[in-house]
Structure formats: C-alpha cells, structure tokens
Amino acid sequence: MADFGANSNYNSLQVELNRRFATGVFFGAAYTWSKCMNMVDNTNGASVRWDQYSHQALYGPCSWNPTQNLVINYVYQLPKIPSGSSFNNRGSRAILNDWQLSGLTVFTGGLPYSPSFSVSGVSGQNITGTPDWAPDLLCVGNPRAGTTSSPYNRINAAAFAVPPVGSIGLGCARNDLWGPGVNNWDMSLQKNVRLTEHAQIQLRVEAFNVFNHTQFNGVNSGISYSSLTNPVPTNLPYNSAGQLVNINGFGTVSSVLDPRVLQLVAKFVF
Image (cartoon, rainbow, N blue to C red; front, side):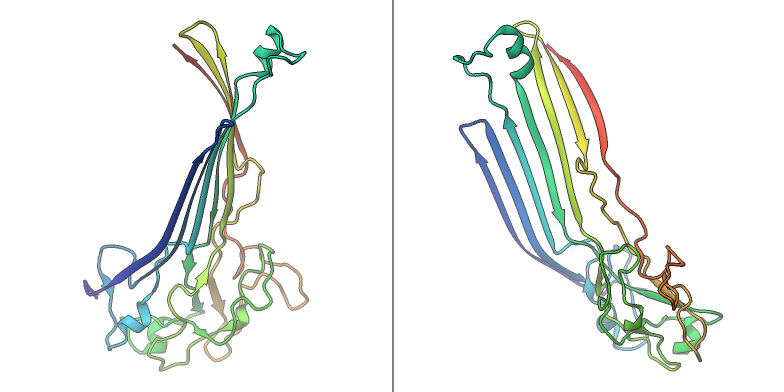
C-alpha cells in the first residue's frame, strides 16, 4: 500500500571560489558537503508497513545524493612569443601564439544503496508471514572488512545474514552502503587562427576523461542463498580456493563510466 506520509531533509555546506589572474589564468572551484535523508526518492508516495516501524525501516540517505562534491574549472591563455625573442617571426607566431588550455575536473563521492537478497524457492511472505512487506538482510558485521580496490571484492558477504522465519522485516538500515566515486578530468586545447580583422578559424581538441582513468559505476548488491535452513551464498565471485569464478557475483562492480573520448572541432567565426 502507499501513503504520502514520507519526509525528507537536506543540509549542506557550499563554498565557491573564483579567481582571475593577470597572467591569463582563470580558476574556479565549487565544493559541497551535504547530507540528505528521506524515506522515499520518488514523488509517488512512500511504502508503509503494517506496524509502527515505517520510519525506522525506510528513513535513510537519499540514493541520488553524494556526500561530497568538488568541481574545478580553469582557463589558461598560453603565453605568446615575447617581442624581443629570436623566435619572434611571422611563422612562429602563427604556430605558437593564441593557444588556450581549459578544463573541468570533478571529484564526487559515491551514491548510497541498499543490499538485497533472495533465497531459492522462498518469498518474503515465508519469512515475515505477510505479502505486504519483504524483509531486509540482517547486518551482522562490517561490510567493508576484507574488501579491496579490486572490482571483484567490494562487499564483505560475511557481514550479512538471512533474517529468521517470523522476522518483522527490520534489518540493515536503508542505503547504508556507498558506491564508487568519480574522479574525472575533461580538457580542451584551442587555437584561434585569424584570417582577417573580422574572421577567424577556431581549432579545438577536446578530451573527456583525458587520463583514461577507470571509473567504476555501481555494484552488484544482490546476494543469493541456497535455502532458509542452510543459507549458503551461491553467487559469490570467489570460490573456497580463492579463485575468481563469477565476475558478476555479489560485491562486484556492475559497470564503468566511459573511457577517454577525443574529438576534433573546427569552427569558422566571422
């Protein structure tokens, strides 16, 4: 069933800095440190329980909000050949002058999410006794214990357990895990070639994710168990011998953001 009794709140610290230097450099930075809490992310109303624990079960971090976000932008007009230089001639000026470097750098924390589970041949009603509410996993340990930077070892499966039959469905807090963050650099190098007093050609090389940094995006957070009586995980990435046998198993990275993308732009301005 649904109800419009959800609530949410958002608090943040926001800092912005913009500085223009006399040497042809512009620098700007914006930083946000925030905390958003809610019971539901969409506007269709919040699911409610049959008891008084709706807020306790559903209230948690907003799934769309990273805690920290830093955005840096910059423009640098590369120096021209000095008038007294031995390289100051028509050819070298045409090649070396009028270059501009600009970029946008983003550092963003990961998004929160909740783990889920399934048991072969078992529905939520078999555990809670009602079809109106499915149970959450039980948190029995540290989900980050023993994890590494490997894309196949992001969640500790031993930190979770299947809720017992008769559970009222309260388990791990909503959105208590955090996904991978973003470390992205977009840059462009631009040159203006003047043809006449009012006409010029603008040449630009643009690179998105210029350093080709691998950026993970999302984690496989659903764990499967064999049965209620003997709840052994069946979709772990590693077997008992430590061999990687399931690259899409529980706790593995589910996708990546785009690799480096280059594009060339030529524009006639008059």
